[in-house]
Length: 189
Image 1 (cartoon, rainbow, N blue to C red):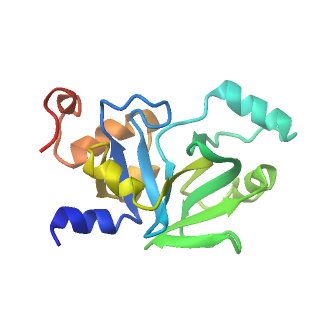
Image 2 (tube, rainbow, N blue to C red):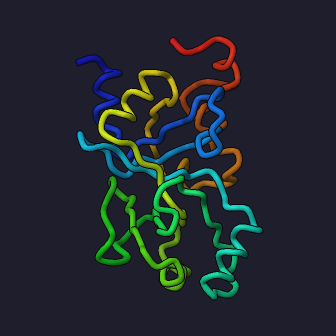
């Protein structure tokens, strides 16, 4: 099995970088942290797109929740948008917490209001996402081999670091590409 095939077979805990030429609203300039990958499919959350202030106010009003301080809510993906996915470090938050890799956990909550109440103070490093991104069996692997995504190693600084708007470009720098825009013109080897 080649290194590329091996990389595609073991994606849990990796980050996918969307190629610059993709234009879908959820995918364009996205970084997706893969929380689960198996023969049955894959699931991840977008870690670099903040929910616009106007949408956040509508959500807070709808669930009758007041000020949530400086907690930013991410657009996690286009599936299960009624659930909150909390990517975090250091500990289990509830019985719905699973370990993704060494110090990174995922907690899935069906009740958005309750999610805010128990994650406001802890853990220190967290990303709250509404919705997630899912792939059926074999679909993600096909998208990677079709050059829609570049899988890279994840680390806490890249996942939880600020500013979120620059994460995508910083991730390309991490893998040695100064400007991801050249990929639009020249493709990928």
